[in-house]
Image 1: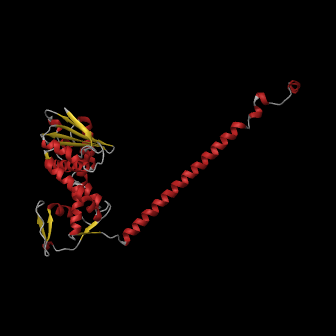
Image 2: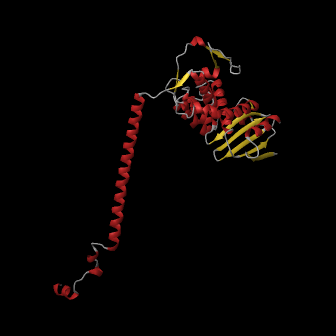
Image 3: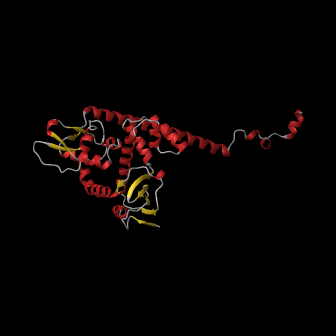
Length: 320
């Protein structure tokens, strides 16, 4: 048994809600021109996620490299082993005793949630759910994730995104901390309601965790690629930190402008050199084709061919 359709008929939250409420077990696949995303569902909970063109294991490997938990060489070695043995990257890294199991699990969950939330932005596509009696152990890659919480987060993300991007319009912006006394900061639980106070600033755990990486050097893109938090949480936390005046957009310095101008000049020089080389090759081709055209109608050796020698045969006989 299976059910399928398009995202024009049913939206992503509706489909996930149906699977969750009915505690379905099977494989749910979404496809669009952007790629495809596959969920492994067991009893209405997500126990596996994958995506194309960026597979989740590749994402996890790159995240671990970004966090300096493994090197690029270690990741390459693990990928080579995976091609030979067909094992999951997480299993291979654990066997190599490079990272802890908790680190792998956290990275997998963060990237899985990232993939799921990205699905909420799809405007078109198709879905297909194949019902199964049970899920093989080899198909599972995650600790069960509740769908209801993801639906709430995805819908909230869509509602807040236009407002968030007013303060964080692109991923190339660099933020830096403002000067504020630590005694005026109080850390609260992620789910706790924030209190209003003129003396204290309340930060949740995600905002505090993100602050460690806001150093006046990392771009928004770098903060997302670290994989510590999902893209939505990074952007939302940045928005909150700006509102609380904990961080500010870094203004470009004279040195930055000098380096930018220098880079642009170097780029234009390379473009100019490439253009000159292309023009030179173009002129050579024109000369070559002109030469071939001329030789096609006139050959300097043609008078010496036997059929074209204009000497009287009688004269030849006299000399012989």
